[in-house]
View 1 (cartoon, rainbow, N blue to C red):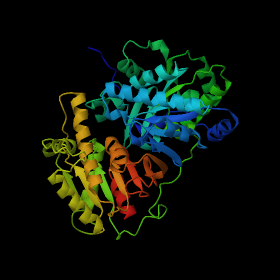
View 2: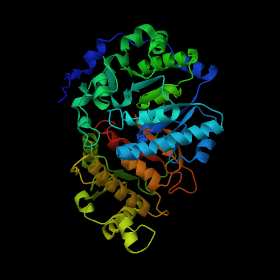
View 3: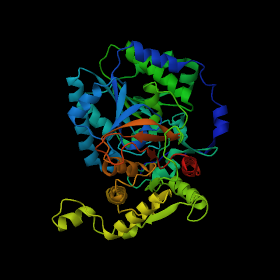
Amino acid sequence: MASFRNYPVLSRQSILAQLPPESTIDAEAQIAKLLSTTSLSRLVVLDDDPTGTQTCHDIAVLTVWDIDTLVKEFRQPSGGFFILTNSRAFPASGAEQLIRTICENIAEAAARTHQTVDIVLRGDSTLRGHFPLEADVAQSVFGPAAAIILAPFFFQGGRLTINDVHYVAEGDSLVPAGTTPFARDATFGFHSSDLRDYVMEKAPGRFSPQEIHSITIEDIRLGGPELVCEKMRQIPEGNVVIVNAAAESDMHVFVAGLLLAKSQSLSAKPYLHRTAASFVSTRLSIPTIPPLTATALDLPHPKSTGGLILAGSYVPKTTAQLKSLTDRHGPTGTNALAILTLDVPALLTQPTPSSIANATNDKTPRIPIAMADLVTHIQTSLQAGKDTLVMTSRDLVTGDGGGESLKIGGRVAEALVEVLRGVVAGVRPRYIVAKGGITSSDAATKGLEIRRAMVVGQAAPGVPIWRCDEPTSRHAGIPFVVFPGNVGGEGTLCELVEAWS
């Protein structure tokens, strides 16, 4: 049985004080200059759930990937775009087939538009997901990468990498990732906190210790982009590069060095990136903007109709945020919420809408009677101007293995989609919040029928807002908040609802 190194919980304030001072170089200006003066590839971000847009604004996200749609997007005047793959909701075999199809379509669309691409596999900042499977598939389509860059740093979520150990901030504590609840995930669990160990745990026998390299915080803060560039150019082809970062300026310096290395390289081979959200916005030179207010979003008057919050995530942070929200706002008192609970154990004993449709030879999925009652309650509350929370019962139900747990998660997400689709077009929520990756993905693609949306900004740090104006989508133009399950403090969801009410 493999042994895994243990790392202590650290004081965030204490450990950050021991690091060299942050770089004073204006790396963001260097990135902008390199992007404007160097012929660089279009960045295509394959997002394994919708939360990867959480540091971006004014960028498109596609939920379909047919070649004609991709060709049209490649012809847009932008540095890159997202494709929502939702691959984290698939078992390995399904994810492999999905990513292969998407990559092949990207390659064809890029060829038709005479462009080259850099691929980012945007994954979870707490290290869950199909790694190295997605990287292997991408290389099988685009060819071997110059190197695989592993950069899970995400400042807004408190995900820091120091001395190759990845941490999740909880208050003033930095908790090693391998000891968090995320590492106990039923499908994507892991033990390692050191990213070198993590690579070898997830890809046993694939890499020797000598084939895993580090860009340290000391490299970044003391050596600047020039040292990062020099180290990147010396890394042998196909090796893994771990990026350490404890502040946004660290990621800016790293990306400036990376782009400098790309501009000086004689090789046509691109880097392949497995990163969290912070890398994407930095690589595209998207500056941070403050969270958008209800006024900035031009939301209707609060008494006109309520907002709709769908909560399917089961991570402890989501449960704590829901408790904070429901303790303060419901079901009685000022600004009371309508609180409706979807009973998951009971749900799993019911036939699915598709099975009902098949049994009646009807191609239109039908909502079971219990779900129809739930939808009626939602519509009544929304029309009365009440913000309405629909949340799954909080006891996590898992299967015998990762595959069965994924199926259960899929059924729960399907039920929340039924709820969203059941709300008739004439009842327009002021806004829609979807809590959790799978929940927000299915809500966007199946519930709202979004094909292309624009990321307009954030509702709170790390919480993106999409807007879809396609006439074929449901509730077109309504702000759609993609609220990650593991982002924010206990009061963040409650504060958002209060601010928008």
